[in-house]
Length: 96
Length: 136
Length: 288
Image (cartoon, rainbow over the protein chains, first blue to last red):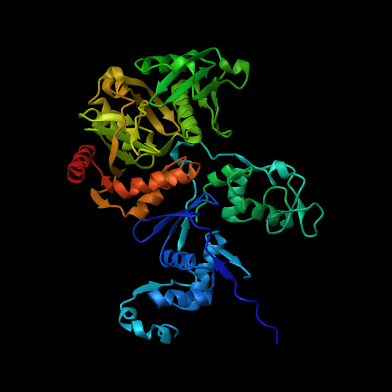
């Protein structure tokens, strides 16, 4: 039985790539690499903070977040958030 | 189902654990990021017809792969660059409503649109791309 | 170009060239109290051109050109030449100015602090600014509000105030007739009449002000006022700025600080006088 493709590992961009301004329910983020500005809602700031500690797969990130938060939502939702962030270039998805 | 896993490593901290802030992961189909699209605001007389060359003139000899990256000429699955730059308005229409860039085959259109999506500051056409107002 | 002049308004200097005398004559009259470009050096050039030499005389049609242009811009009739010149200057700023963060907004100053009014065409921001200018406020600008990228202050850019339709009569009732340009009928935005800012607004155009209150007026709606959340304000301002994206990181910083420190309210009103009264009341309440 062939293995499923391994989960991607998500990397936060290098330090100081993203400038953040917390507003209210949303943070404003400026990405120096793309020159784009994004307004991001929960749980994105928590995800970015958690990835700053080091790269993680979705499952590892779920564990890391669970250390600090009472999580409401499934792993599939976290995968969707990470895919959204990767599509926008806010995190990098790699094989390792 | 996984909400209440309680790693034994944390059991010594359980009083703090029970006071953890809630973190909502959101619905799978939801978008939690709104990207700012540039606007020409109300001072514009009409829609900007700036142009986007595909590819950037400094790399005009390269081919465009289906995912929009630039590759060596003749690479299988890649197409040559467009002969003429595309108008900003045409690019906006395709990205908002679908369809094809003028004068392109389906294969060329996919490659060119992905190339444009990947434009970064400093590349020819980026300012034009950034200034196209695209409603979400 | 046979006819031309230079103008300095706040930090920006323009050269306007024209194939026809009349629009330049109008500008010379209305901007009489403004300085020329220093040493003749202009940041931008605006050109009012005939497409063909004989079109200066036969069905004259003014094509707008300049350092920055929209190639698809519709030409205007010669009767609207003054409007073409003003639109040309707007386009140069909107497309080419990088020294400040530009917000599509009018602004007035009192006691060194700025009240900024932002909104779409028809919101009433120009009429409100003109009316406040006649009631003890100093006009900082009509079409654009300029935010300094480092000090966050508002820099004056007091061009002619562009009054439209119902706003024209409201301001004609309170401002000296000598300060108005010609009434232009049937422009793409309806009837337009330009108002020259008061003498002290022109004389003090280089005096900045600290932004203190941001309002989103909407004329023609039942009276209502509500506070805007910072995230809504931030997003709306990125759409009200023509150069936010081009300014990159500095624009992000300036806008972030602005949104964090300047309260923002949406103000709906259906009566001009009541609108003005509410603006003054909100200023007292939020700024003191």
